[in-house]
Image 1: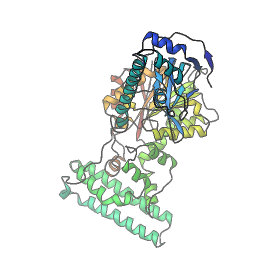
Image 2: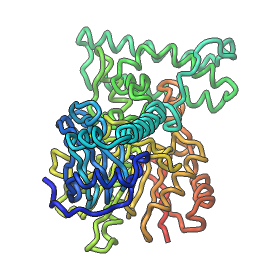
Image 3: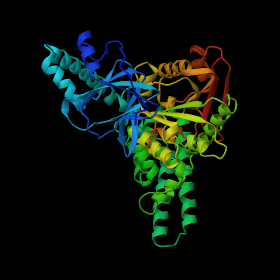
Image 4: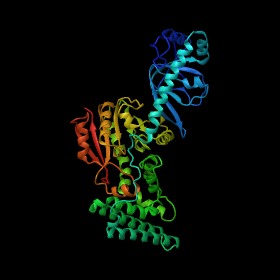
Length: 496
């Protein structure tokens, strides 16, 4: 319910109804009910039916669509804008919820009153519908610009499947590599037969599969390091010969197939967190167990605790009376937030999760709801690259901490620099930015590149230093942390 009803005021002419006159606007406001709402209050509920136009006079609102039972922010509206226009034009149920994003004042003009004015005031109908048409056209343009890029443009910059035929060098494959691949296939087939005939116990079968996968992965890595000019041929050969085995693993299959558009989506990350082996046939779960213990997978598990610790550290030095506002870019399942916020001594963290994937946001929103934390979260669907270029629709209050892990590995330097500069503007004085990136020495790189087609941009500490030096942080001191597996490097920088 609204906080209160207020007396008629005379705000400036709404910018969204730009073709109506000052007199038209006065007539509309004479018939309007002026209402105030507090942060988090529902102004329009998705699925509700009310034929009216809502003129936003003060404050901001967010537009949310329900996905998997959870509300995901898809737009933000400010003073001078209108909403409810589709329900008015179509006379249908609301396609989204509108929620106060702070203290809000709205002028609500009932549909019957609008129709009476349109019928009695000469020219008003033309001016009114021309204004609505322009508003709807602009919003459609926003939608068509943002939806396709949401998956494929700018972020993440996914490497599409490489061509696997006609690669030069196939006739010159090192014999030791061919032998290693044949040995791998032999062990896999013998292990499968042994499990089928009940001659191998599960732990013995797991040991054999793990050792065979280790030897193959090492052979692939070492041959690429030694014969770099044949990397394409080496990778293609190993991929073709081992594909039927590795795709039995649930994790490998998802990482390779990329159903959400890129390998490291929220469900893939959640698989790593859950650490439960699964797959097809007798070999699938055994291979899956091996993949879940790769250094890159261990790094994902480790970074969760590193980020939770970082959130606690920032909260510990923040003034006790102030909420600690923290934003995660490309947030995925956002487990680190829940690790912090469900603890007995949880700090007063207000979390914003920004992700390109509405399913990821719905998943995390469901967890927040289970823990009774929904009021402390905002889930915003946005393209982070567009957001950091000033083309997104997510508006943030100044933040104590902004972090990005698992995203910059997909982005070229120019986009990472935009992200760093944008974060500098969004941080409070004393606020911290954390940027995580996979290092060039990643031991899982060859397997990720050539078997999973999970291609990342690897960066060293010096490369991250160079990016920050070119950014608005300038010469601000940088500190670095590496999670225990040594695969993920984290740069910490505090705004002066």
